[in-house]
Image (tube, rainbow, N blue to C red; front, side, top):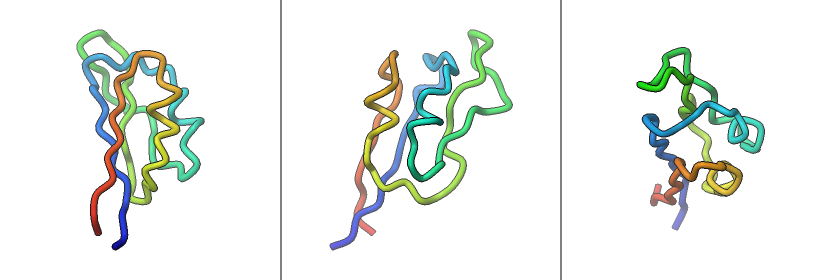
Length: 72
């Protein structure tokens, strides 16, 4: 049974520090060109390829990223 990763970012709470962008080994996350209600460019997944390693969630200082493994 194969799995792939999927991330969900709480864009309202993200401060756009970019640590998750640097931590992602698959380069799936980037900072959005849009801003949230607080004026920050939030993180968002921009392409397929997440392996569910959770590096982004572990490094996030505000805990706004959830990582899920889904069956393919």
